[in-house]
Length: 214
Image (cartoon, rainbow, N blue to C red; front, side, top):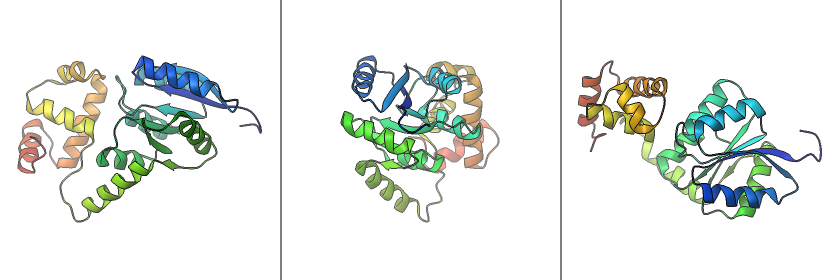
């Protein structure tokens, strides 16, 4: 990034009013250049590949692909875009998984527009930003995992596991969660790996025994 040039930013959120307000506020800053605004994860990843923005500001709960799935794709393909999550939740498991996956920043939607803009600048310069609320739940989550042999499933993996237990097929799960069938297969295999099983019935049995299904 040349000295003095604005930081290119992609913003993704599935709530149009929130997205519009956020883009308008960030667009007032001379140090930021909003190159794309999108409403779903699949489009966000496509635009990240096409435009290579310096920072992607992502709602972690996007349809089609979640923020975490986009982050994994960016890291897997060694894309230059840095990722800042803006989440409506600060659950310990979600924050832990985001940090573990290598997110560059995590803010909640309670953050004001100036703080979000400043966080984008920090992330673009190679820094890391973690909201105080996220720090607290992350610390609690880490402590809770010490000597805990219960497999840790991501929120999406838990959704897939629940639907498997309810008898949904792979295509039916994809339709229910509005994600691709290949993504369902990936989540299913991740569940199998974490539970140490190789098929559906065993996954459900182990999950019930370990109280992963309610």
